[in-house]
Length: 226
Image (cartoon, rainbow, N blue to C red; front, side, top):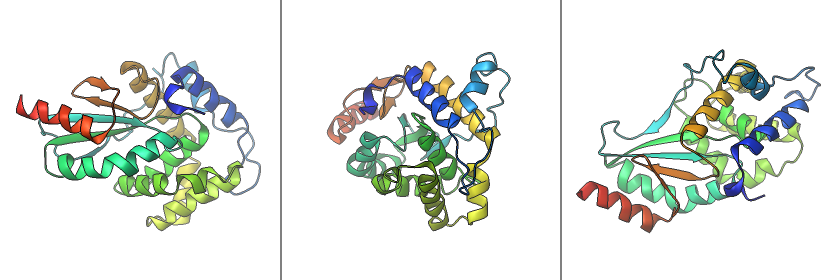
């Protein structure tokens, strides 16, 4: 499936369908699943779902002259390629040097992307970008697991490798309220910024179509010199 052309509405429907077939993370049936998207839609455009506790994941100086927002999904192969081929160099040259304030925003095309984000955000969020690196580096391995229990166990293992204890990871994965808040937060962000595929970068409020490092370098250098 080409994730860059998938629309938010279709992606949201996929989450509903996926959560409808929830299987307990411990391998046992979990009864009625948490259905964050259904709850979000029933809550008058999310008005009754509190998203204030959702942490914005950022790197770099908040006062940097340029702000770059990335919208990405942990199950998106294009996002994995971007993080392997572009992001590390971009981070070293612009984020780590104080030139760019970087903001990462989750997109949920399916329940597995949501689960991965819940693992990455587990705890105080300090491990988010380290876990994100592992999720993208090992994407083919854990996404390729196929069935929900195998994928959930693979995600739990990634969390443990990153330094979280297994019970904490399982608790994070089973937090239905957090899942509801994340989906509502994702919908609001995605609709506000007209996100229709991933990865998408927004540089100082302008959505970019060319995600090569050279194109980003030219654009950002121009803003820094302007």
